Length: 280
Ligand code: NAD
Image 1 (tube, rainbow, N blue to C red):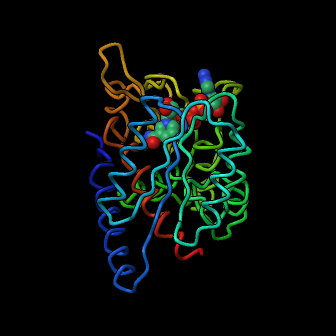
Image 2 (cartoon, rainbow, N blue to C red):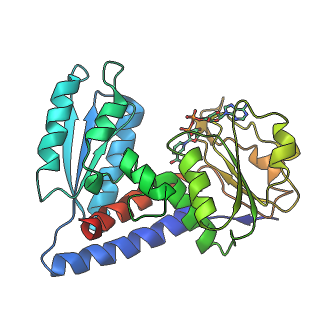
Image 3 (cartoon, helix red, strand yellow):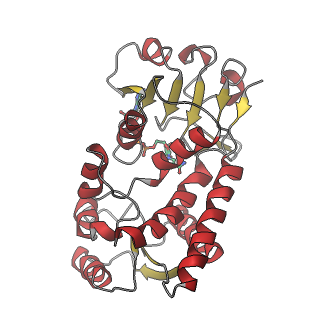
C-alpha cells in the first residue's frame, strides 16, 4: 500500500503555525489584513472566496471583502487596487480569478503592489522565484513542496516530472523543484511520448487538467505521485487528474483527491499573508 499524503492534516498544521504567528504579531500591536476582491457571482469563485475568508477568520487574519458586480469596468477594478495598494493597513490583495471576459487579467495582476501580491502571480514575484530572491510563491506549488517535505520525501537529486506548464501551477512547480535540487522535466500538450517521459519520474506532479487521465502506464513502480487536478466525475464526486484506483497500487506515495493538494492552497495563502508583514 502506498503512503497516502494527507493534505488535510498538513494544511491544518500549517494553519496552526500561522495562527500562532498572527497571535504573536497581534500581541506586538501588528494586525494582518487581506483584501479579497471578487468580480461577478461565479458560484465556484464564491465558494473559493468564502473558504479563504473562513481560513482568515480561523487564523486571526482580518479580511476585507469587495464583491463587485459582473459589469465592473477594468478601470474601476484598477482604481480599487490602486486604493488598496496605498492603504498601509492592507497587507495582502487577492483578486479571485477568473475575471469576466472584458477585463484583462494580466493588467490586473500587474496592478497589484508586488509587496502585497499574496497569490504570487505578479511578474516581479515570478521573476524573484526564478532567480532565488525573496518574494511570494504561488500557493498551490508552494503547498506541494510542503506536502513533500513534511511527508519525509527527499527531492534533491530525484527525477521530477511535471505534467502541465501553466503560469499558476506547472511553471512555478518546476522552478520550486529545481530550487530543491530536483532534476526537473516539464511536459505539456506538445510533448512526444509522454508516457516514456513520465515513467522516468521519481516524483510525478500532475497538473494536466484532464479527469483521471494518468493511469499506471504513466507511472514508474515506486514513484511519488502528486495530483493537482480537481474535477467532478459523472456521479458529481470529486476526482483528480490521476486515476487513483489504478495508480495507487504501483506508487510509493500519492495525494488523494479530495484531501491532498486542494487544502494546501488556502493554507499557503494564509502563510503568504503573514509573510507579507516580513516583506513589507
Ligand atoms: P491549465 O489548463 O492552465 O494547464 C494544463 C496544462 O496541461 C497545459 O500546460 C497543457 O500544456 C498541459 N496539457 C494539456 N493536455 C495535455 C496532454 N494531453 N498531455 C500533456 N500535457 C497536457 O490548468 P492549470 O491551471 O495548471 O490546472 C491544472 C489542474 O489543476 C486543473 O484540474 C485545475 O482545476 C487544478 N488546480 C488545482 C488547484 C488546487 O488548489 N488544488 C489549483 C490550481 C489548479
